Length: 244
Image (cartoon, helix red, strand yellow):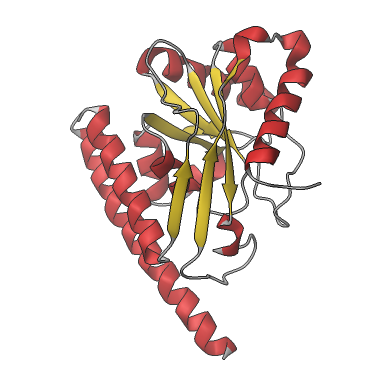
C-alpha cells in the first residue's frame, strides 16, 4: 500500500513538473517578446489552475469586503503559509499583477527560476541582510512603477504544524515604505494537500481562501510597526481559523 501511494505521489509530482516547465517556457517567451503584463498574468493563472486541477482540488474564495486592488495605491498580500499549494491558490483568489516574494535559491531552479526572474518575481536573500534591503528596494520600485502586487508570507517559510510561525519584519518595512494597503488572507485546508517536508499528496481536498478587511499602513509608522505586525497577524490567524 505504501509503495502504491508513493508511486501515485511521484506521478502527481511528475505532472506538476511538466506543467510548470510548460507554462514557464511560455512566460519566458512572453517576457522576451515584451508582451503586456495582462498576457503574462493570464499565463501565470493558467499554470495555477493546472496545478490545482492535477490534485483535483476544490476551493472557494470568501471575499466579504469585495477587496479588489486598484491602481491608485500600492497593495501587498500577506497570508499564512502551510503548503506549496498556497502559491497557486493566491494567484487564483485575487486579480492584478501578483508576484511572489521568495527566497533567492528558488531562482536557481532551471527554467522555473528563469521564468520567475523574467516575470519579475521578487527574490530575497535571507542569508544577507544588506542584500535583502536592496532586494526590498527593487520590490518597491516594481510596486511604484509597474503596479506589481507582492505576495508576502510573513512567516518566511512553510509552517510544519499548520500554526503561525513568528512573523518577520521585512514585508512590513516594504509596506510602510510604499504606504501600501495590506490584504490579509487566511488559507484553510491547504496543508492537507501536501504537508511540509513530505511527498504525501492528498487528492480531492477542499480549501477555503478567506480575504480579510484591508489594513491601511498610512495609519502606522516605522515606530509603530510592532502594532501593525500584531494587527496583521491577528487578522490572518482569524481568517485561517488558527488557534494558538
